[in-house]
Length: 264
Ligand SMILES: NC(=O)c1ccc[n+]([C@@H]2O[C@H](COP(=O)([O-])OP(=O)(O)OC[C@H]3O[C@@H](n4cnc5c(N)ncnc54)[C@H](OP(=O)(O)O)[C@@H]3O)[C@@H](O)[C@H]2O)c1
Image 1 (tube, rainbow, N blue to C red):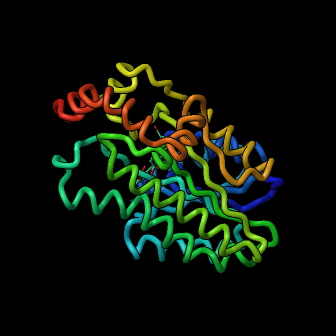
Image 2 (tube, rainbow, N blue to C red):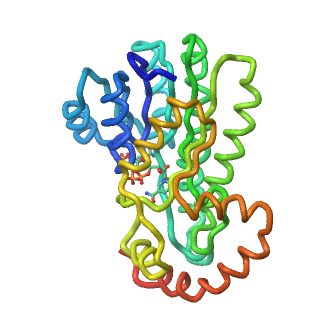
């Protein structure tokens, strides 16, 4: 996909990975519709990018917010690409998560991308060279203790991406799935930072995910998993999950201790 002059809707644009993606996409000639909930953040991001860009504040977990986004895109369309990047996370053992927090996480990470895609599809279909990118996670392929609800949302998003890709395979639209590994952004609490440091996990800067996105689109690679050994573990977990069970069982005491330390 050539990004020059493409109109791209980027959700989660005000976040760590979103901002880095916005800069890389703008540097490659795309015209962006930046989406988040904070008008001030979106406005200063738009003015820091090369080229002219639009932005809209909308809560994508609500029907009103998704309608506002649709109306805004309709009056500024057609659009070529939708990047479903907005997301939240939770590092908690399941007994410590409230029912409402679980429902909220699933609504933002899974229901919202499905419903936003459904709403914007008619606008995407009117463009000759278009598609959808769903931003998943390594945790969309490896079930990880302390992140059960987040994993459920990202496994779901990966399944949705695969099914939608097949459903749209005669439409000219492409469906991409991008899976970052741990990345240094505000989505991760200091307890998650401590977990990564105690377990020796590599933590990327957001620019790594942003550059991976550009390469993925330019090469038309439908699935992209960032980082070794994460790429390997994702496949290994699919083939021999009982070996991954044993290795994560050894990490469980550290995971449980940090998940249960005082929340930030
Ligand atoms: N960082 C990591 O370690 C990591 C690893 C793998 C995958 N990912 C995935 O990468 C994506 C981006 O995460 P990030 O690390 O950049 O997180 P982040 O810095 O916390 O940014 C999250 C973004 O999502 C937006 N958002 C959250 N709830 C929303 C809602 N209800 N409606 C509209 N927008 C909403 C936020 O907007 P506001 O400014 O309005 O809050 C913000 O722009 C997520 O899907 C995440 O799951 C992250």
